[in-house]
Image (cartoon, rainbow, N blue to C red; front, side, top):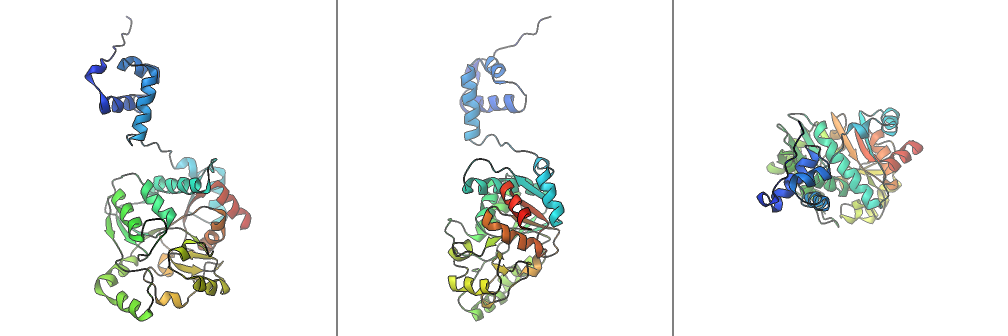
Amino acid sequence: MATVTRRRNTGQVTGESIVIEAAWLYYHDGMNQTEIASHLGVSRATVVNYLQEAKERGFIRISLAPKAFTTHRLAEEMRERFGLAAVYVVPDGTGTEEDALLRVARGAAEWLPSLLEPGDKLGVSWGRTVYEMAEAMPQVQTDHITVSQLVGSMATPYGFTAEICSAHLAQRLGAKLINLHAPAVLSDPELAARLRAEPIIKDQIDALSHCNKAIFAAGSCDHSSHIVSSGLASHEDLDWYIKRGATGVLCGRFIDAAGRFIPGELDDRMIGVELDKLQGLDMGLLVSVGADKVAPMLAAIAGGYVTHVVTSVATAKGMLAAA
């Protein structure tokens, strides 16, 4: 007996509904565009337009399984060379440095939910990469996750603040949020000490000691870097730390090539996590990309802050060549 394909009367479904139906038939039911066109009683070109509209309106989210990025040769070589738990390496593509940053941020966003467990207390740093990761994070349902802001607030040339990074990530994860209601750096060490002693801020800082997982980027010691443009450190501050061997910046603190913390006058004026609280965690997720980040990333790994890395092919190759 011949199978009869019943054509759909598109008068029964229009507008947003037909766009959603076309997307469902294509992505969930596995029908090809010609079959969908026949089913809906429209042309194949119209189906193509429906699918494009579904993407543009955010009805479709396409992701690749993390295993594709964590088990190939380069990721495994990184993991073995640096003694890491896992590495997620995204393709370089053909775009600009900006495109590379966005790809790495999206990779981190897609990987992170699989790295979290019920009851985790997740510390979140600041910076452009961390912000873009939070923005790319899909809405997921987690169980009893707490997100804590690791560094106080500061100015930024990118139009976001440190608390936005943690707040947006917490919202996407459905997590409890603990913000740090203080500037990252003050002009007076005594004022910073008084603020750290304020009960509400003291409780927020104490919460950082209970984080068992953290997300951060590695900053460079460059006069054009975010550490200067955000106002966290002046050019004079940066020169002072560079003379003492500063190679990278982690959560606003300077480290040398071996990952050792370099104490200085700036630390007395800062409000944020101390670096020893980031060592020995269940997960230290380093999300960075770019040739200028190779040395800072290697320093962060050497210091014992990192268990997991998300980066690009070019950056991973640079790290392996420099190690």
